[in-house]
Length: 227
Image 1 (cartoon, rainbow, N blue to C red):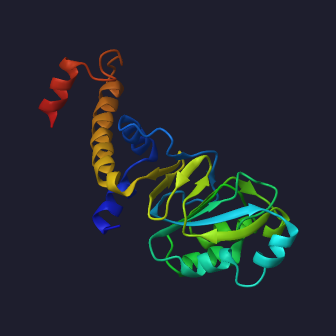
Image 2: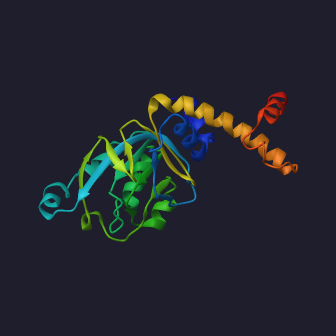
Image 3: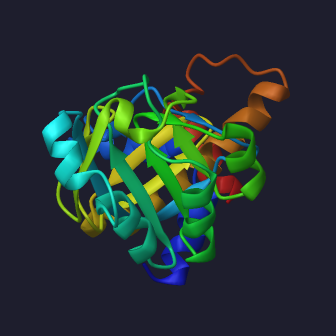
């Protein structure tokens, strides 16, 4: 992602991006149910994906120990990427802790998104890398998960995520943007933000929302004159 686009997306609220994607026929691009773990909720980056399977003892024995897919992913994440984890909405175990969060930060990752739990939650939040998760849990990975594979299309929070998809998160949630649409929806969302700010000024001045939100032709003309 070039820095101009990253800067635009950093200024753009997720709600505005979701609205613009919906106008283009993309409704199923929100990763549902997640919440920011720490004070910094904003994430802008491209997806580096990781998939966990439900725990099966023989498969965990072959795939869970040693330098597994989870550890390889956190070692391989590149600056500006977002580690996105498919954990099937399972909250009965953690999907990462403070050491892996620290590794992602040191590697320059833009954030971590998981539809599972996080352990060492206070320590992870203190590291400062933005994390969106489904909840906290003290148990380690192997209680419910097998770290299976990475860098493939996954499902996270009900949304399909492919490697390289654009991920943007804030306190409203997490949205997945097809890379080819990222610039277009960022520009459109920022334009809408400017319009909404002007509308808010009119409401603050005492005008009713009828005909103003959304703008009818008369209000639209006034808005265009003000620009």
